[in-house]
Length: 300
Image 1 (cartoon, rainbow, N blue to C red):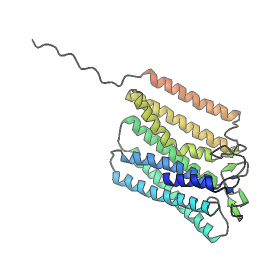
Image 2: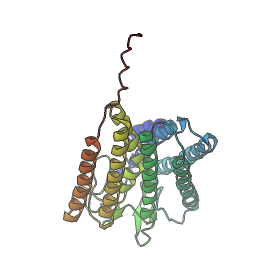
Image 3: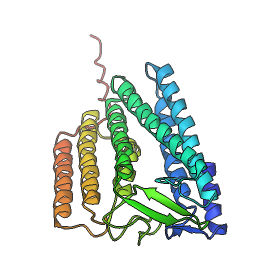
Image 4: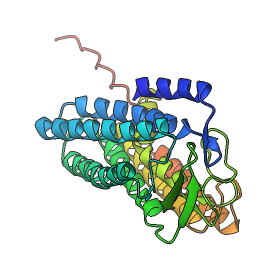
């Protein structure tokens, strides 16, 4: 994924073609960068000592194979100058790509569900790390599932022109309330005029990294184990609230950068929960340093 990200970055510099107003190679670049981070986190997770490593190692290997296949398809379609997702054109090759995606993506989703379930009953690392990993995996599963919301927009049918000038029928899409390919944010290209389901998809997918980094930061701060566990739980619930709010916002056709009053109230409620939870968790903070050794008494 990292090597592919470099290749896609170079391709963006030398290939000036666009697809729905965005650089042709931007989508595979974002995919490879995101999945490089996800794969590295998953590799670290599976290296932790735990029971059932044969099962988790098999699940991780199968996930890696499917990721390479899926991203390979995205890169290949970009090289052909056409769409990798939502492409329902009558071209035989695009039909083959669509069928392949239709089979591999659900398998990838189920593999991650199985991995989350297996690790839910394992004792590894410290309790705060365990709960960070478990909550992060379930957040990632929710993020993956939110991707189906894009494909389920079956009433969204448009005919678009790809970078090679071919007419392509697209069914589904990531934007809500506006056509795909309109004005977007820098780098991410998330819509600035309507809802965009890629926002909660991204936030949920990377919940695993967020929770693991949180556990590492809390350990570095020298907080007591009990306090770290409480803080992980508070942030996990807050992160779930953020994911749900962003999904709700996108489904209402509201741009991320122009939140309405209802969205702001929901975000404020999430922030208040996290603030109250952090305050409660730190009230019972204790030092993590071991107790001093007792002073030896002279033998009488």
